[in-house]
Length: 332
Length: 265
Image 1 (cartoon, rainbow over the protein chains, first blue to last red):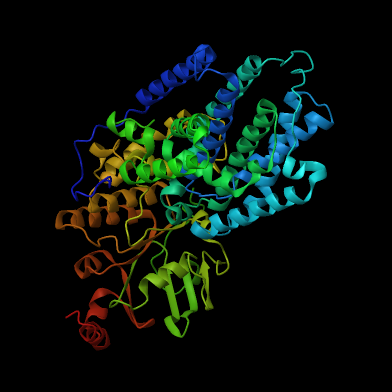
Image 2: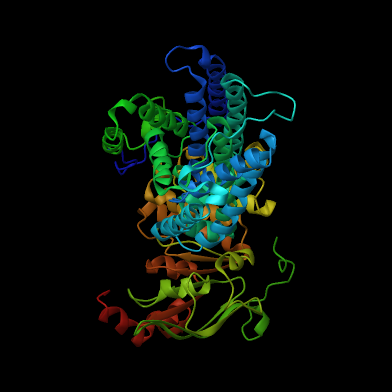
């Protein structure tokens, strides 16, 4: 039903895309998003900063994942490794070294980048399901490493009560609200960077490789280098999300490196809309909200999540934002 | 772009440096089946060289070997005097030996203009600049548009390639290949699946672009082969059966037998 161009004849009537119009629309959405983030803490029920920070960290994580899946065509099933390791590094350096938040987040992000470079250079040698399996296997190694090194990770307990030291050594992050605004700013910057990557000369080549790898090779592109580059970018941004989460939620735990976290980020991306700029944000908001507000259901949350996933895949394969984009005939 | 473009082209046979692409003993075994066997091919610079043969003769395998999408089991490939037998496909493309594909190879979710522009973008070198806005690529739009017009797709420039009919996708593919300004083009069945009016247009286009480059093509449409090619190599069961111009090859009894034997009439 959702198949494109199944009609056989070219749909000449389809409206030509105007790139400039789309850019203007996206700018509007960005401004709207920033304004929303600004006022959200003042809205009752959903407006408590702790929950909002969690949503934003996972939204950035999902956006980073989507950069690779939606625009690079690479399905990684081990993104929890970068998110989780960065989360540990950030929590550890803040708690045991007393580093300021920006430094521990920077170190966490760097650890995501380095791990991404190492794992990426191995995984890009294979394609499709094999690629996914290699990323999963490598991520499991990180999980078991975290489990076996309680001196660093705190083992089953995780690193709890991560302190929020003064930002730049000056600005206190005492309240959840002030931390929320820091997280919101970093989140917006991260999404803006991803947007730029997608709409850069590099992004063009990336989309070409996603669409038809053999053809990109025949045009002289060294596709593995591009794949590795987007892998590292995605892992770095996943690391940024993870290290920010450790400071914001004040906890780094085994959950962050568990394979189910890798699955959850796939779920967020697909529910929101893979290959759309704003889809993963909506997807993360939906999934985290469900976990939060349906917490009373206990283990049933997973069942509800599964049901929503099945419905999504069956009815709107393009995800929430993907479907909206189709309605208004604009890429979102 | 083309380092040897200033060299005067000679159509004379014999001297080794006007052979742009040469294979010696090219062989490809797939687990107990030899798809291409001891093929010696010599393509002269500036000619249109056709590779024909019944289905399963090994033409496409041969193409994949030449462009390094497959590694040969034995034999050597020399392009412009350089041994490219162990090169990677992207490197071969960078040397100016660019192929098209049998199944139309476009980038479906890019617009027609972007499809061509991706090839032009190669002139910038590697595009790892993820922090730069894609608006820098607007500088290439003019040239891309000219190529899109040349293959008659101007009206579709802003459409996603996935929306095009089959014949137009093939035309787009040729425009994309041309955008690289390759010294040598390998066209794998450029006419396959095309309507009659498309065949004429693309044949005309191939003729036009062959002016200052070498073309090696696999083609089933024998009237196209007859009108376009300077030299024809006939493959059957992975081996070279006959070679020469159309008049010579079409009278060769072995060729006639191979075609009739394979049910081509």
